[in-house]
Image 1 (spheres, one colour):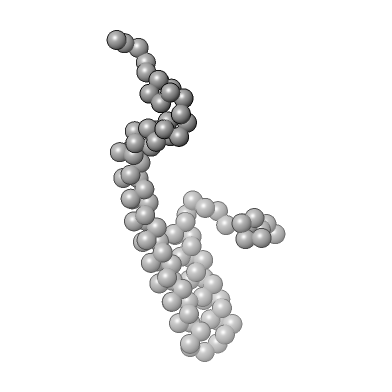
Image 2: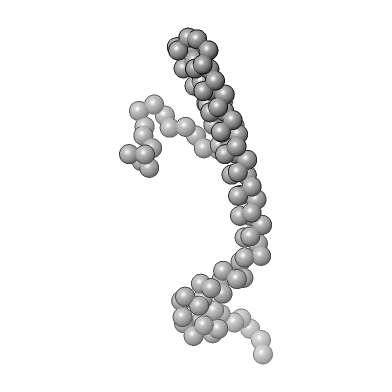
Length: 99
């Protein structure tokens, strides 16, 4: 016995069973990644909630124009630190997912 065994040999060509085998073989490496990703998303969500609350507070104290400017700066700073690898759309561009 030697050589390489393919998924085709194990599954008899059943694509769904092959997908299941691949899932089980990859899960020990993938699970820690997705658990870390879920933790990071929760942390980002909490920081964004805090930034939104901070921006909302600006509207309770006086000048609406200053509140808009300061609130915008707070939210921009938060988004820049939460998603530093995701560039903001350039002026005139739109996000296709929002259209």
